Length: 159
Image (cartoon, rainbow, N blue to C red):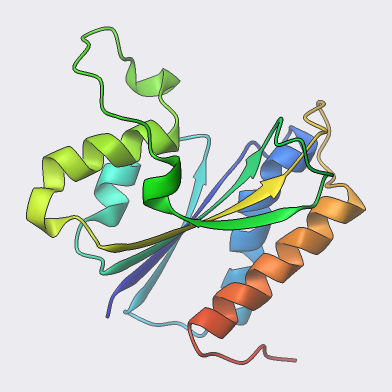
């Protein structure tokens, strides 16, 4: 089984960098493998198309604003729960697209090659100020995401 793990976020917008934080932690903890691809997606979205092709399982990590939950609250949901419907609109710009919209386009384009197993980890965030540090609550949630992913992959955490 080929697995892609994708973290999204802006590294200079405080807690919005949670996806990137998780990716950095996983790169330090996961053994090198041809079966696991780890992507720091930054604020990219349409590139999701290229990262998904050829993978059987996808794990996405991102921050979520306005969840009405305290910062650091962790959500794990199937991608179908958060995907937006594709819009056949010539005014949909590649640089303005979010990953949930990009997933819908990916499904439409890849058709039978679209992976069935896509999980999304969302961490509630509040602080998106121009800062490079994560809040303690969000970093703790990121550490939990790392633990859950390693557990899901049946890997122990190296010490």
